[in-house]
Amino acid sequence: MIPFTYSLHKIDNPSHFSFHADDYSLFKFGDDLVAEKFGKDLADGFIRDFLSENQIEEQMVVISSPYSFIPTATFAMKNYFVYQLNRWLAERGMSVIQEVKVHRTITYKEDYGELSAEERIRLIGNDSFHIDKDFLEGKTLLFLDDIKITGSHERMILKMVKEYNLKNDIHMLYFAELVNKEIHPNIENHLNYHKVKSIFDLEGIIDGGHFCMNTRIVKYILNCDFNSFSVFLERREARFIDHLYDLALGNGYHTIEAYAENLEFVKKNLNNKNYKLI
Image (cartoon, rainbow, N blue to C red):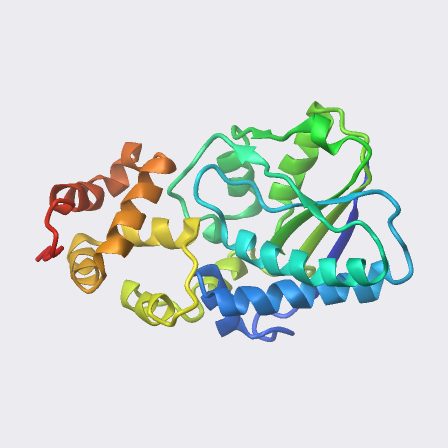
């Protein structure tokens, strides 16, 4: 099966992008205002460049990038993509979007954006994705992700499609896509960390009033050196620390050795009502 692929932005230059690199970095670390802009822009682009000339008669289902317990940054973008697309559909008397989740079984500490194409495949090759096949019958599937670099995640999605023997029409939708294969895949990390250079750069995002926790920010905090981690937590409210700990447990991060010291530090201080961790 060959899916239809659509990307709003094409990356063909390592230093010039058709979107703001700082915005992309903020988005990846939980800025919901940027997620809103990206999601609406992607919906508008998909409508303009495809749906306006290629009406889909079947019920459409949007499927965000796979996750276990903590959603990815794409999940926040997906929300606004759906809101924007639903307005267009409703105005035309068409069925609004349904949603379903792709479940994944493996979590890892490695920074995916730094890896080569071969390393990415080795890392996620043993993962498995799961979806509700019966719910999808007779529907058009829109798989949504923020960026396509090497296509390794797409191959995993299509592997799942084959394993489940899905016969649906499939669209792979991306906010951005690397189209110049001469550029190393670690361009992804260049974008991811364009605005975030240390754990303390997260404070403006978290305190900005439009923050949405995701997998990347949880892993980044837990993987930070202990001294910076403890100083950072001292400045956080109790609710944030509780949420961080619960999400970490939900994704099984307490079983990853690299996160053990920081998580144990949080655990020992959870009963301190003032969270004076230093």
